[in-house]
Length: 464
Image (cartoon, rainbow, N blue to C red; front, side):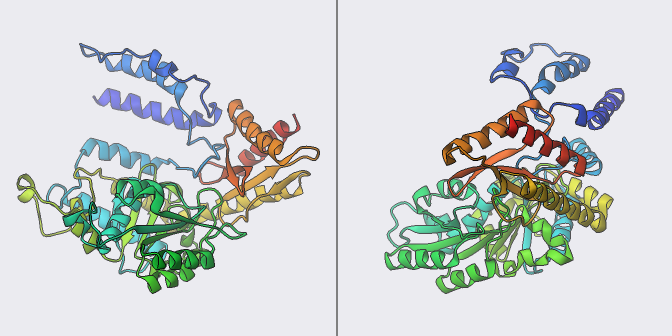
């Protein structure tokens, strides 16, 4: 075992050292990896050397290297040495942080790390944190608490109840698709998600939101919750949370702030304004694995009334009654019973980087995004498609002589061609009905030269 651990440690170190030389996106067809593997599990055990050989020959050729410094797609989930060591140790310990008794240190470290994040980004101390895997799952839990506040759903359910009526959830047309998924899971229904138009800066139009909620109230529907976003997925736009909160208070609606990406920016004293109004929220989510240098997966949900979450999810069967501690038992605040020791990798990363180190890297990512935007603005036929508020840049290539639809297809083809070459990776999105290209900077390895190379490849493909 010791020898194999050393071998795997060397493999990981070699991978990290050579990641920049690898093609980011694999040149494999759907089903190719499956076809190279046996259809049935092996009857007899195999030497670990053979397993690791197949890792290199079969699995690795089908990997997208999200940690590559020129991977500029989505929101980068950055891996780093300290957090990687934390993951390895957590895997070795293999504890379940479901109750305090099943792992006192895992439970208490989770509380410490959550308090650190809360303080670093300036959230009020009245908010209580819980770690989930992703912001989508965190949102589902927050909306479950909002649903409980709307009418004793845990005990009585929703089916056949005339006293509850239609429950509405509001979000801008730029908010994440997990809003609909949560509505589906919670029995609220996809049709009861009201998408509010955004303004010229891709922020929720508060006047349109107020009109929508007033129409629904007049028709007998019940405003259950509103999702405001600090750092939307496509453009990293920032909803006017304080104004949205005022409308929520007037109608008794739960306010959830999705700061999964943008919340990290509030670490910078000069950018604390991005979280303005968030102190009024009923719940806030911040993803450590987006811009706080914690690898997948780590999502911190903060709630003002944790007793509502507990009212929805606390359920202690007899076989767990001996483990109920009277301390914080995180199993009572979510659908999961078994819970990974996620706090360890965050604790190790935060200590190794320090606040100054984290802030310096976030500032550098913002600088690189502004630099890239400047290159775009100076290039003929290229234009910035949305305000650059964080480390995300949306831009469009629109040469003359082509229709808007033809340029839509052209922008999508440029993204595909750049990604197929393997030395840079970006994505596309649709804004106001038009296809645009998009980059996101967030990897600790990404330097100016990587953006310069990606920009050169984009221009080459555009010209071609």
